[in-house]
Length: 397
Image (cartoon, rainbow, N blue to C red; front, side, top):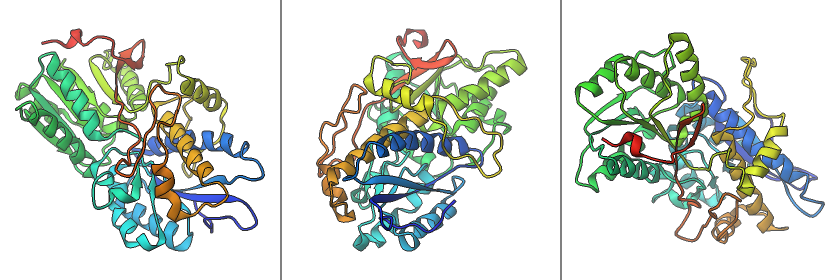
């Protein structure tokens, strides 16, 4: 994956960023699509920089969604490769595991930009000062999900979560959101990270149904969440099941559709997915139109070692988020002008106020605000795709 790189390419005007993500394994599509969206925009950006500007190169390293390899990748980026910054990391267990390195190498001004996670450790002290996020947090997502479920009378909410930093972050978000209304999690269960779609969650499904929950929020990834939904439906549970943006709802939906065809039933009803970017179907938004134009023609991106027959998605929520992060990365570099230095990253990022991404809400940063967006979009399956929820009355209890 990696060859020797420097923060500034010799003889050129290029800044190099290091990205550790899952490009293989049960969650490989997350890393691939996020990287493809990021690179689609950056290739568009680089050809427009001009002779006086700085181009951007991203060096990807595979961590398989495991903290150990991510830690080693990060040490390599900082010590061996001397990258300009870390960017577009994917996943909570991986990104949170390397946060102490940012503090350890504070004298080198090492920062993490726009990771694909909504976890609080990347937003709170002591590490939040070294991280800049674009997306809303998992606390934001779970607060909106819980609020809307309560609005339609569904107060016995269960949580099925991945047993790691990601799952606990979402679990804590649901717990806090319910506590604000004087309520508690009605039932919970956890599973080990890396579960495939072939995993049998029928025991866990029965556990929730026996507890009498009237909604379940899943804090998982596409394979595990799809497997759980399948087993809840097979056990007779027709209650709404919610999930967070990290799931990769497009891939999850593909798995459920294929399983539905095999089993002769519909597994895609009563699903509610929170997203942190608008739908890529919202073509009235200029940012969506730009994304569709560039992404639709993009042919590049990481393919796992050996190929595995991976077929890139034309559009997805994940690649759209990567694309928007590319826009913000380009804006940061552009604002640095002819003096791009690591120590200028905080001041430059904090100067970005009301930056128009073309999605209807502007990104806003500041000295005490290292998260650019707070918007959460709730979607459900209509016409075979995840689209905005237009009415919650169907789920009123």
